[in-house]
Image 1 (cartoon, rainbow, N blue to C red):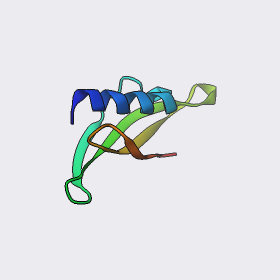
Image 2: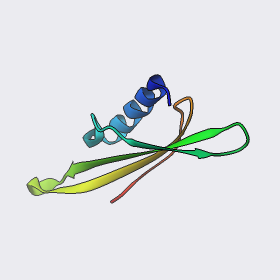
Image 3: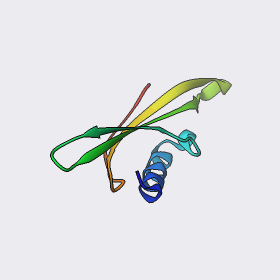
Image 4: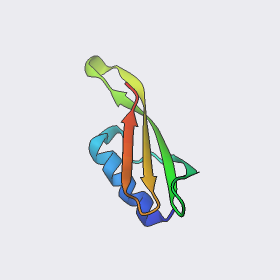
Length: 76
């Protein structure tokens, strides 16, 4: 995956989940339709809760090779 595409995805994830700013994802590749390659990026971080508590949060993003986000999901 090109660095510019990764930066584009990182900005989208950070905008929706500010606690993921600066987190480097793990990247896996998968094949889609012919001549299409998809990437699954997994971000692991910690979300702040009221009362000074925190919880682990995982954000998974499926994107194409151009950095377009196809699907984004998060743990509770």
